[in-house]
Length: 360
Image (cartoon, rainbow, N blue to C red):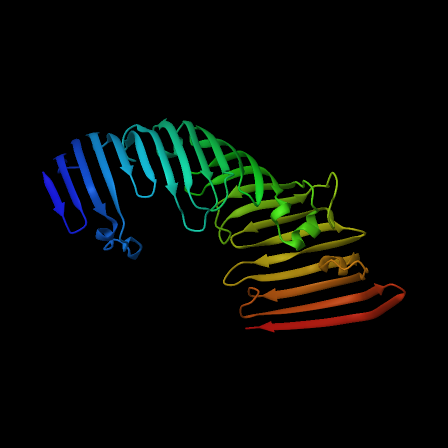
């Protein structure tokens, strides 16, 4: 039997824990309450004045344990979970978990996240788990009654999950399908998504580009690894035509291929009566470097980007080299050939323009 008392906490525990790597587990823990500030030795983020109540029961062995957690937290927040979990090196793995969380506030996300997780995975190893996994998240941003929702359904077969995700996060709605092998030493995936931006609440420039009606973007991602600096991947974003009330961008696509932090890209975009096309290379480390080897602009109305109704049409061929991130130390050099500007009855023709920009 164990007890811990402080000015803010009273925690008691009883049961049996094995001294070796194999043995019986029987544990009951009660915190009535646990002062969060008493955990500040783990991290400065726990240096707070609020407290929680908690009960935990665990029974089984070091290889497979059944557990139940009940934690009614402050201000309507709560966490409940129960299930079975195996040691990662057990002869057969089992993860059967049902968890409900209410009222959590992850950093950078809308307030009041409610969520449910339901797992039923078994297999001889982590990389060969099979079974369903469901995650459902809801959030009500502060000051709004309407909830945002994201649901994920994954069905694992020998470590590969067929994935289906759909949700509305306010700035966009999303539908995603495909497969992912998340437990491989280097995760692999083949994913397709349809993204519909919420243009009504978007900045004015986004509404000018995409229009005020429904607009779909297609995203395709195939590869291995998620860290761009080391992944081997191919990505494509496609702008689909608008059914009505379309913006300046009519159609277009952008493709990127990366391997080991370096790769190539290509993009073609049709905007109004004009077109922009680029092809080049990029390198992500030790710092971002970008080369546009071939670029062309044809009858592109640059005034429309700022909402000006008097068109300024631009034609040019160009190449560009950039090093560093915008707003930080870097350098950009661009060469424009066969430049032509048209504004009403006025035209400007210049054989070549060179631009250099140093920042930082």
